[in-house]
Length: 267
Image (cartoon, rainbow, N blue to C red; front, side, top):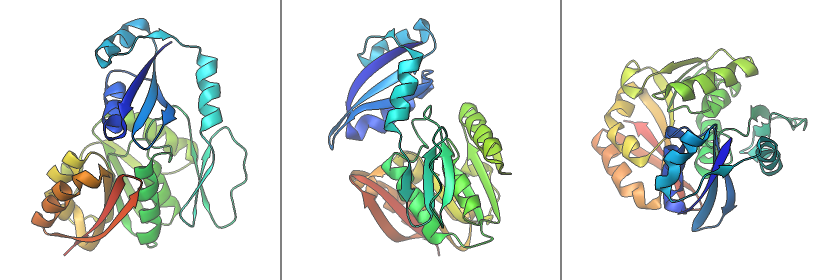
């Protein structure tokens, strides 16, 4: 196994993480994180994959698998999110606090561990808006953490989809390990039936949130709500303009540091 260390600004971090996984990374961790910059370490199974990353400006070096696992286990800690969610690394035996649902995550996933601000914002919004029996669509499911939270919080049905087959495999494994019956498919918003969801969750890029605005309106039931994140304050005009043009009303804007999450309602 080989690793590569990369420095970037906070606005570029998520795009860089996505590019690393697209290039074949098996895992990404943050070595350092400030309000403005981040240092990432990406892991690859062999030298040929790591060498592809030369274009990012780093130098591939041999990595010790045991050091990677130990580092990840040290830095990924249990988290209380919202009023009812407890996210815990799968190797930890911490008891679930009374009144909270337990979601176990592993360290091999850069997105979907609950450690990122947009994931936490979406989890809090799902908890806040979900009512028992609701139909939920998780678009761009990644690790499946949002879908898992929805079903454990009482959703009547959850459909999870992602256009990345590897992400779908990861989500399916996570659902099976958790003993959950959640439909997960290689698909995008355009493949979902019209008026099929009371609640949509999508933690993806601002460009995709904006481009898919008509799809959010199409998929939502009357008075349904979309929970949309994956963008920063500077992206708000792009996203809100597209959502409004598609006939959705912005019902709330939430933030953690520079990251934002919007709730949009089908009018």
